[in-house]
Image (cartoon, rainbow, N blue to C red):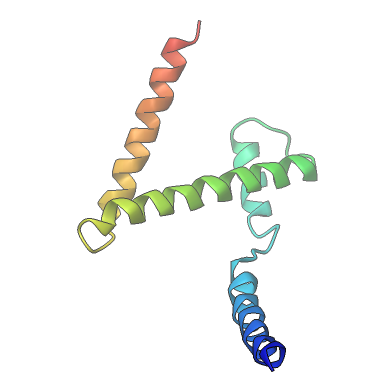
Length: 105
């Protein structure tokens, strides 16, 4: 009897985790055209390699996701997320990059 009662509870766990996993999957290539135009604007080839665009997209999505999580952590103290939270983090990131560039010989 104990094995039959364990069966439905394990099925519920599997069923409940599937929608959350599907909601976190992202479509690849959504920003492909925009990134190609931006790359060209910054001096790259008009038609960059698809692998390069895909890598850049992964980097950008990871950066933005990390930025949103940090902004949520900052805003959790106050109770609401504001535009200023993002601006603060972007300024701080820029200052850290500038300091790192000055440190490298």
